Image (cartoon, rainbow, N blue to C red; front, side, top):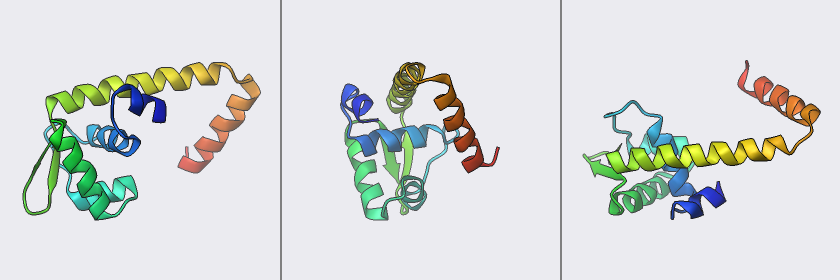
Length: 114
């Protein structure tokens, strides 16, 4: 995440927020409280992250509850950054022994209940 954040000139938590916001249905805003829960951060931290993203034109902020909505450029950046992350993770996984990947996949599936 750190490498990709640097690649797209964002702080890691800003990139994480952008990726989380991109999971919301297009055109649907996320409140500061909901964003803080997604980020596992305080509402103050979530607000500051959203404000920094807004200052760069990646989100729009509005309303009494600090609704945050991705802009087109924010969605484009989230898509590009998500693809970069996926490629980096894939390259790193290819370097691992198949048995290690299988154990990791089984552990992740157990955690998410699949």
